Amino acid sequence: MAKVKVHVFLKPGVLDVQGKAVEGALNGLGWAGVKDVRVGKLIEFEFDGEDPAGEAKKMCDTLLANTVIESYRIEVA
Amino acid sequence: MAKVKVHVFLKPGVLDVQGKAVEGALNGLGWAGVKDVRVGKLIEFEFDGEDPAGEAKKMCDTLLANTVIESYRIEVA
Image (cartoon, rainbow over all chains, first blue to last red):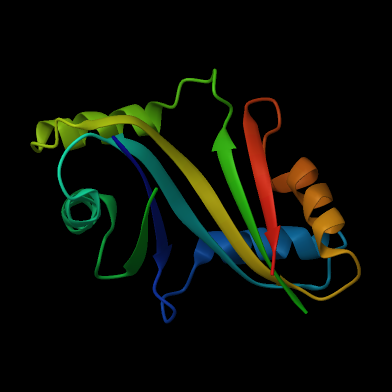
């Protein structure tokens, strides 16, 4: 049984509208020093089977990430 | 200039419907060994100012997390 964490975030060149909204809100609340906000997803699960890292990569390519605009990073613990 | 990462995830007792949906989809695609899927948010930003960890905590309590149902973890690099 492996604990898998997948971080999914937009690729650097892609406009992150959710990040821009958060940045605007934080600036408006008085935190003028906040910049370059990026909002991503963190998917955690238990995996029972062979080769959790390889299977997680297949899951990302199939379902978890839109690889046209998103990158992902996999951690297995 | 500090790089701040905020992980926001639902508290353990709260039903994670998005996680359940991902779990059902992965199971249906043939990954029967996937269990306990939790989907959270990862917010990254640059912060220019004093006490980034303390300010990030205030940001979470004010805007980034709904502390009734969500927990958060702050990393400052």
